[in-house]
Length: 273
Image: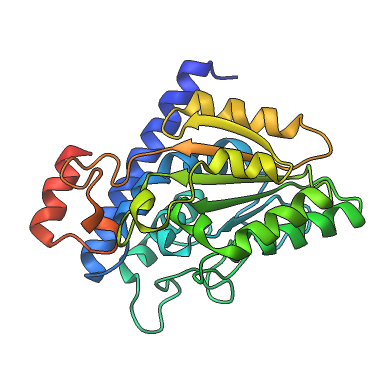
């Protein structure tokens, strides 16, 4: 078994590859959402390469853990992870957003192997995760359900209806992540429609809450273990992240929420990664 340091090094190397894919595919497409994809890359890498019980050769395996990318505009990050995991050829990444391609601008479970839910309309992922987690309990299955939300997404009312239901049904097989990068398409979340303090709101709805640095693999993995050991209530892991993480000219710049890099900017970004 590899040491903790070796494991973290492996995850860091994989995350860097994921970030390079994100830059290359959005530059090739000429559209997409690189900022929020880069901010959640470490979380997705940790989940798919160290946590989730999945089998790329059997994407519909009934015993698999489930993952829902509720902030569907960060699809490039999920696509890059799925390709690196072996769900489909990496060549597909360069067809992002092309007509007829399997990788559309937002996740489409009917067209892409490995997707458990179609997402894009913000606020709906947690509701879908509730259904999967409740079904798992009723069917006495031991799979777990993970969902990733954006911090700006928590401005949606449906998130809190779902959060109330998660706690009501004591869905301790459900773990939510909030990618807390502080920015949304129109600016800082605290200026657009502040959902702060996100942690306190989840606590008020009966959730177990964990605060972490979303770019620290030790903290991500320890939080997941704590969630697994929490009984009778769902867990939310509020992960502080940096929008555009890894690309200096994108970091903490709201403009990169939904703008693709030019070919020249992509070359500069790849040199930094």
